[in-house]
Structure formats: structure tokens, C-alpha cells
Image 1 (cartoon, protein in one colour):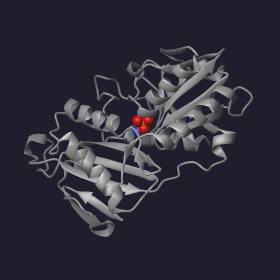
Image 2 (cartoon, protein in one colour):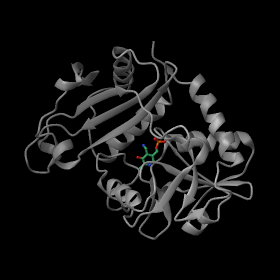
Image 3 (cartoon, helix red, strand yellow):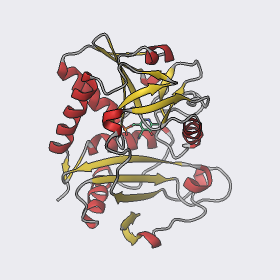
Length: 289
Ligand code: PMP
């Protein structure tokens, strides 16, 4: 595999960054996870926009224009002759001193890794995932905005560990007030009495790109859609519950905190959205070749 670092390609064993990079020392940096299907990069423009928004929020100057960044992603996929897979795009603060000041870091580094991916086994998409609530909360907006897709994933990782210790596959993270924010790596949707609901981004979630796509797909079905402050009770009593994320795509949930969701299988709205999502990803996106 060939990895892009700052304009050059390196074999994966030689793809290295400085031990003084603040991305490593302090998690000072941002990233994107992007899928490509059938020789097209799905929602590439949205990912590039979110990356530059994250950079702006943390005062990080990306040393490439949006066009150059878009090219770097496409070129890295092409260089590896891949047709379906996943791209990890990372911008670190760059090498600096041992102090935390970002102003001592001369130049941000851009890394692009293109690979293949399967997150959950195929039968998960029929049987559904098991979720559990984690005690680790999403950071408040006045700590580190959860909308910034930063390299600081420790709270998500600790939450994931908790979920797994509880015998679940994913963990629900609440915000400081106890409202449902999102899962450790996915956004959350429920269906109740024919209406689709998702927590507001202000509840402490990422502006998920799959979330946005699914909201557009819901609108096309004609079902009402509401962004609300959501509680665990809303999830327990939902007719359907599903998660969205670039890696996971649209994945049904069968059980949450030992409560069976609906009849314990992917419900009709979830199935319809999974199918609509599949046809969208196979037919749209920025061409690679
Ligand atoms: N929330 C978190 C914390 C995530 O890491 C992700 C995955 N990037 C998501 C939500 C889903 O976002 P997207 O659909 O843009 O992948």
C-alpha cells in the first residue's frame, strides 16, 4: 500500500511522521473517514468541507487548497488501484517542540491512507447491533466542540471499552445533561409512530455526513423528520433504531441496554433507508479514474 504524506507516496512500512508531531504528542489534528464505491468517492466535497471547518475551528492552517486536497485523496486511491474502500485523511499540527503551543509547529502535515474495509459482518445488517449506554460523556461544547472531528478520540475509545465490557457492540454516549448525543463512532436515528427522529447536533454529535445523507433520504420517503433532544427512554421505546456512519453505513439496532428494540429485527423504515442508501452510494460520487 502506498501512503500519501505531504505530496509524496511511501510504502506503508516507510510511511512515517516525526515523533515531535503534535498530532502524536497531543492529539492536535483533525481527520476524515471517507468511503469510495464503484470507482467514485462518496460525498467527497462534504468531507473536504467538514475537514476545512474542523481546521478553522482549531486554528489549523491546511497547507493545501481544497482542490489540491481533493486531488490528493483521489490520487492516493488511484495509486493503490482500489475500486471500493475507505480513505483516512489526516491533518496533524506538524512537528513542534515538546510544549503544547501550536505556534511552534512550522507546518501542518497531510496524510492520506487508502484501504479496503468491512466493519461489521454482513449478518449484522439483518440481525442488528447490540448497544449499551456508556458512563463516559461526550465533551461539552465549551470543552472541545464535538463537531470538530479531532484526533482526540480517547473519550470515544473509553466509551467503546465500556460498551464492549457490557457485552455490546457499540456504545451510546450521552451529553453532560444526560441527553443522547451519539454512538462512539456513529450517529443515531429512531423511528416512532411513523416519524423519524435524530438528536440535534447541539446535543453533542458530529455533523455526520451519513446522517445528512439519511436525512435527505428520509425526506424523499415523505416521512416526517425531526431533530430533537433525545432521551434513553425515546430509544428504549422506539419502533426502530439505527445508526449511521461512513464506515458502518446504515446499520439496524436490535437491542439497547437489554431492551429489545421493536421486534428485534431491522424494521421496514430502516430496511428502506438501507436500500436507498445502497443505491445512492453505488451511483453517485466524485469519479476516481
Ligand atoms: N460520530 C462520531 C463520533 C464519528 O466518529 C463518526 C464517524 N466519522 C460519526 C459520528 C459518523 O459520521 P460520518 O457519517 O460523517 O462518518
